[in-house]
Length: 135
Image (cartoon, rainbow, N blue to C red; front, side):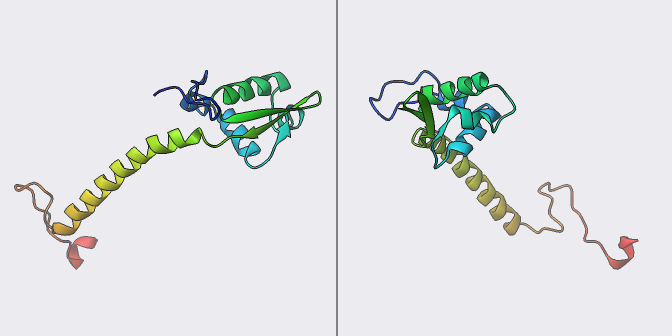
């Protein structure tokens, strides 16, 4: 997959969106930052790791364009930037269509066949259960 593009200049990001969200901690960071801006000191309080480790995860997300930084005095605040996730959405849409087509074909097949007797193999037929067979 190609490198993610930043919203600003269109330059390639250092980290791919897929690589950035591969880590469960980074996915949790995105959920935490959805719709709100927070400093790293507050963010790190939500995770069982050092502030330095949280900062490294934030850097990877920022490099992929998934997090924006804003300086407020001596503090850096972070917020989620959802636009790069569109690349992921487009990629997943292909597989969604694939499985929808497969499921529709299966449905057509099942509805067209005799669900009791026809196994799809001409030499193998299954007889329906009678009341005597259920014991």
